[in-house]
Length: 177
Image (cartoon, rainbow, N blue to C red; front, top):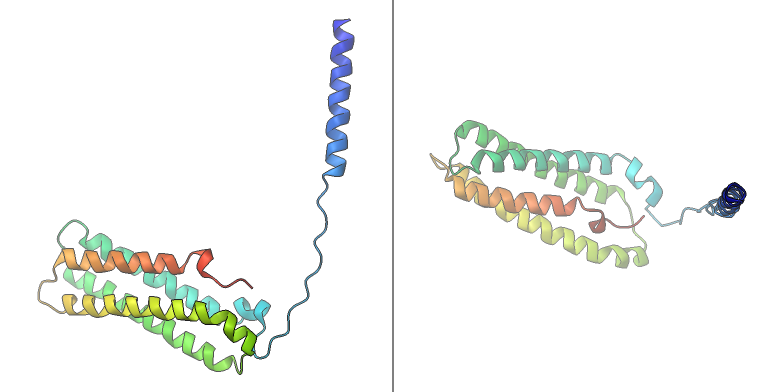
């Protein structure tokens, strides 16, 4: 009696899971057609090279900012020349990001007014972030030009820049495509 109940329970469980797996098959997604936009092909945007270069320079700036922060985080900068080299690379990477962005803007052509309205808030946020980063770059530049840079100022500006750069890298900051 006990064995027959066990066998019936096992058979019932197998049938239940089999029926569940049959009905739980994923549905095929509908194919999406690319939306035509004057001057912009959104699906091609990540593949056109501008995005790849921007991200490479962004990651480079983050890496050297993190290195600069780590060099100054213990209250003193052991090797000032290395700190200056790291700062120079951060500055160069941010300048290159801006250069690539300007090239991309010039090749986009005339943008659809509806699309322009859609990207306007994102562009304003991006400009505000760039202005904050430039302020930290200018402050770091003046600190780094002194004979012995003050580590706590370098650390403070590097930490603020690192937070900004990481924030720019988050998915919620990106425009949906």
